[in-house]
Amino acid sequence: MYTLNFQIDKRKIFLSLLSFELLLTAVYLIDHFFWSFKIDAFDLDLEGTFASWFSSVQLMTVSVICLLIHQRKRALANPGYSKPLFLIACLIFMFLSVDESIQIHEKLNWKLLRYADLLPSFKNNHGAWMLPYATIFFGVLFYVRDSIFDVWKTHKTGFLRALIGIAIFLTGAVLLEIISYEYLRDNAHLNAFAIEVACEEFLEMFGITVVLSGLVLIHQDTESSFRAT
Image (cartoon, rainbow, N blue to C red):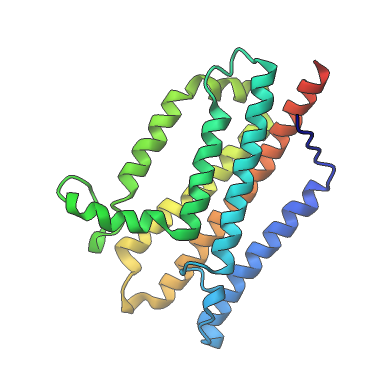
């Protein structure tokens, strides 16, 4: 049986993560517009960079916390927790962590081009991965809908914060990605593309930081309920 206590200053951790995300974004933009050294380790549009590994660790941390919440929920035998919401969330964030580090969705995109007549995509065949990802995402939401409402009723503050974080993350990962696919991926828009990449990656990192802060609150509530039994 594990024991996990968050005896830390959550505000300082949150601000530290936000500061690091702003630093990575600023270094990328300064390098693009002023230095022109093209430092690969700080390029937000490449794999294996500080930003990609940071995001991967963030996502894996979220995955672990979801697993811990699931274990406590299962131990409490909460009747509203009929579907393993947090176990599924754990697996999703674990996949996203791996995806962030090795860009599974980009590799999948080119595999899916053989079904180009069936799958919608954007300019130059980008974004074919989005429909399969969206189908799975909404299918999972439908499956765990009862547990979502139960978690909303019992952990409103933490769950709302996590939902806001997911919305911020999706704004960067999906909305800005679509804009870049359609309008910015050519030599005539290099500066605009750099700004889009910076905004996209920052929103993804910051969104997961907000998700993390919300899940910490849910874990604390669940842990308190478990100890009270």
